Amino acid sequence: MTARVFVSLKPTVLDPQGQTIRKALNAHGHPEIADVRQGKYFDIAIADAATADQARYAVEIIARDILANPVIENYRIEFVD
Image (cartoon, rainbow, N blue to C red; front, side):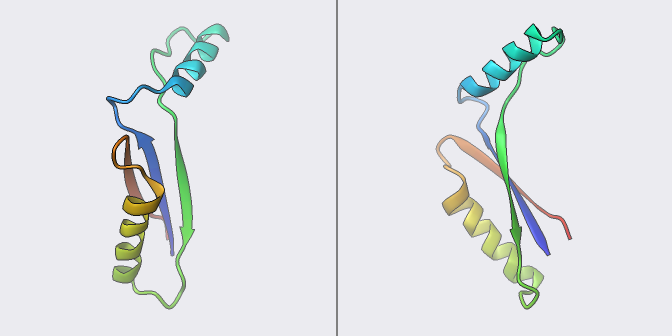
């Protein structure tokens, strides 16, 4: 089983890297792009011996306490397999 954790800045937090990407896209002939928000994701491989409930619990704690800064970031978890 693999968990994928997506971490992105909250909508109220400025995203200078996203704005730089948007400006570059506009300069490369894509004026229709109005905004870009950048983020990151983590693929976490779960041991075969773990139950689905154990995996969900562990990944939730890891995402909340380690991977995302709850002051400025949101996160979303998907299980891929």
